[in-house]
Amino acid sequence: MPNGPKTRPELSLLGDYVPGKSIDEVREKYGLDSVVKLASNENPLGPSPKAVEAAVRALSDAHRYPQGNAPSLTAALAAKLGVAPGKLVFSNGSDEMVQMVAEAWIAPGSEVLICEPTFSEYRFAAQLAGAEVRALPLKEGRFDLEALLGAVTEHTSAVFVCCPNNPTGGWNSRAELLAFLDALPERVLLVLDQAYGEFAPAAGASDYDGLLDQTDRPNLVLLRTFSKIHALAGLRIGYAIASPELVRALYKVKQPFNVGLVSQAAAVAALGDDGHMERSLRLVSEGMEFLRGTFASWGWTVLPSAANFLAVKPSCGSAKELVAELESQGLILRWMASFGMPDFFRITIGTKAENARFVELADAWRRKQ
Image 1: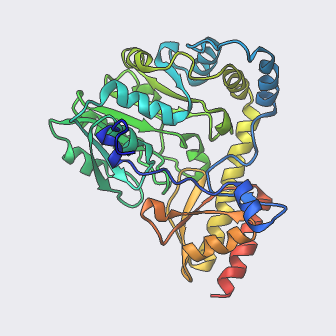
Image 2: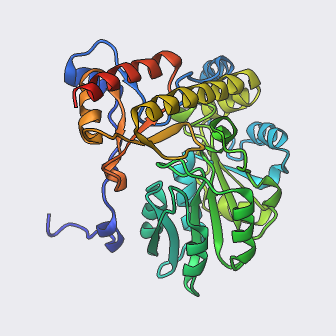
């Protein structure tokens, strides 16, 4: 409609998000009874039974608004992490927290630094805020901190670092991150996204560190989520850890009731189930060892990963063909063309049976090449 209201000019810079295929979509497309999804880095164990029970109980109060400051969840998480409650603020998934950061600190005409490929929300939120995004290449699958530091100018308002990085799994060590923080001007905000950080020890990243002891710094915001290790992706609970001063700024842009009552109850219960977390980490550790060994025996390229997924390049055929073939047989992977890596696919670590099913199908495809 040429005479309708004009959209903001920033929208012309934004592309449409391309999600992975859903189980229902693939089931209907191919007429399948059973579909395995190893495409979206979800926890295949599902939520803690304690979290499910708490969510069901909370449903009877679903006609009530939640407490906007999530006091029970704040207290439980602060105790779990060993941080002051005033250092925590919650969001409707990490996506919203990235947007909250942009609303609080990224001004029109400023500059934001990232490396790519990475989580697309950083670019989206910065461009929507009217900032210019300067993207540097990754270095061996992880953020090139030295290059980012050299790219900082007087116009730089924020730097986003994804560690471990999605979609490659690469990570930066504590020493590297501390050196970067020490050299970064305090006027520039470092947003360190640790959505997959809990998986790092199980994935073999002994030098990974969450930097919780650095959150008094005036320009550091850590982002985390209940979507991955706690398997509450459908309930949308993200959070930030930062100095009380930075948290107060985030509260100014936070929607009053952005995390629902049911979600808060489930998250509190999830924090109390150490057994579920231990099982999740064991699943990742064992699955990583099995899949890495399989890919090595096939001669396929696997990027180092400290997350619950692997980025893999077949040595025969193409990643696109493999993903299409396995999808038709009811196993969903993520082709990485949308990340600018068309030679790779990404596979989430699944259950033992799901991993074995993938190997069976991929090996049959491989032998036909």
